[in-house]
Structure formats: structure tokens, C-alpha cells
Length: 171
Image 1 (tube, rainbow, N blue to C red):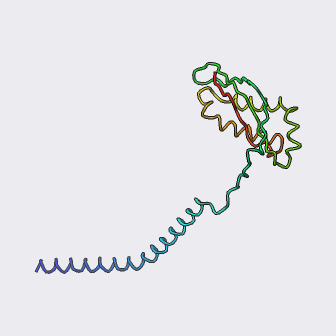
Image 2 (cartoon, rainbow, N blue to C red; image 1 turned 180 degrees about the horizontal axis):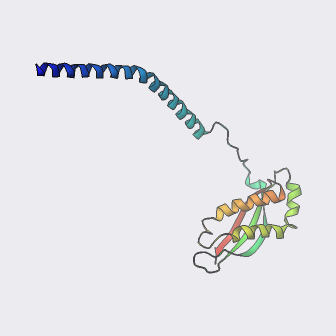
Image 3 (cartoon, rainbow, N blue to C red; image 1 turned 180 degrees about the vertical axis):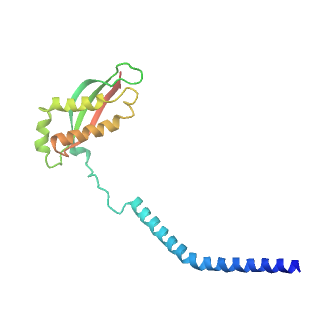
């Protein structure tokens, strides 16, 4: 008789378990489907943002014949910030501004470059002087971008197209 009662209790527990699993299935399945749909929508939005639906600003292509290089400083020597070694290092470079001849304000900016040469050199010295000897080669492009931005702000123009360093030598 003990065996039959134990079998009946196990059978009852199994039926209760099966019933609760069925209830959970019908209660949680719609919520799980809604959650799955929401996650899918979020993933789609993220994919769209990675591809950016907003068009990128197209940097206007300038032909080489529309560019005019102007030498600003020949053999300019700039002291770098002391680095890990504690020694004083210098950078020797030639600097040229490249102007876009097709820019709207080219005719007003081009004559200002020569008289403002001292200010341009000062901006270059300040930007390059912040570098250390250890990172001056790695940061060269970043500094050129920073100088370009500062000069464009100083002259309030986009006519200044690029900064070129020639004979860039760390001493």
C-alpha cells in the first residue's frame, strides 16, 4: 500500500508540474515574443546608426592646379616640451600654407599671409612646442590638423586648405 500512495503522490506532483509549465508557457511566451520583437527593433536602429542615415559632409575635392603653396617659415627651429628623458629637444622644419584658389575669400586672404607671418609662426610654435620628443613623430598629423583649425579660426576662412611640413627633423 505504501508503494501505491508514493506512486500517486509522484503522479500528482508530475501533473502539478506539467500544469504549471503549461501556464508559464502561455503566460511568458507572449511577453517573450514582445521582448524579442523589441530587441530586434533596437538592433535594427543600431545598425542604421552605424551606417548613419545622415549624409556625411563631403569635403570638396580640390584639384592640384587650384592649390597655391606659400612658404611661411624656412628652417624654423622649435623647442619641444621636456619628455621622459628630461633633455631639451628641438624640431627643425619648413612650413608652407596651402591655399585653395577657388575659395570665395582667396583674394582677401592671400595678401594677408605675408603681413601676418609672425602670428602664423607663433601659432605653429605654440602647437608644435606642446609635443615631447617621444611623441613628436606620432602626433605630427594631429598637430597639423590643430594648426589648420587654429589658422582657419584666426583668419575666419576655409581658404587655408592644408599645412605642409617639409624637412621635419627632430634634434
